[in-house]
Amino acid sequence: MTGRRDFLRKAAIAGVGTAAGVFALPSTPEASDALMSDERSPSANATDQSLSVTAEDTSPYALWQYKKRDGGYAPTSPINVVFPLSETERGLDDVMDVLFDAGWYSLPVEYVRYAWNRKREAYEHQQATAAETFYGTVGRRHVRCWELEGAVSMQAHEDTAATPNHGIESYRQAQRRIEQLFDEAGWTVDESQRFANEKSPDHDGHVTVIRP
Image (cartoon, rainbow, N blue to C red; front, side):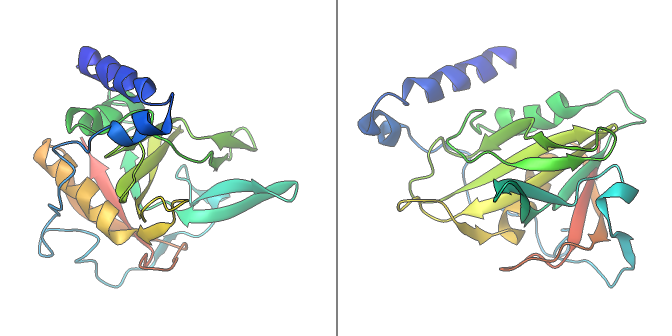
């Protein structure tokens, strides 16, 4: 498993040198359109729920990812998948291994983003990332992750084509793809919670909860 992760990192770095090198990197075979079915998807099949996370200082989960702007930090995209792991022996590496085993790249071209760490009372740089392709020339699914207080918060989205910059095509599509991958890996994917972080184009605040 470690050998495959190292290989993916080296393959990604090898393509950084020139534009030709970047565009030569292929999409991974696993970058398919397979999604969790509506009937089984906690996010697609969510019912009306009371808000469980309304502010970041009240929960070990992050609520948003942020970017630096005008001397401060501005929210950009909602956290839409969480992993409560504090009572298990699993951690961020185990979460990322599911994606790397599916062929996702561990060092994709991406922007720097942050999440609020209430214990440190500071914004924290993304701790781990993965994407279906290194560059995302024609779009890709992409995640950023933070492990805070024994829980992993994931921001999952589907990028638009990089022409010239990535935008957000969908949150829901990437969220359902993450559900699919972890379900196939044997994790428990049958619950959602509602956060106060609705965001266009298609995040309704229902956040997928995934357990080992």
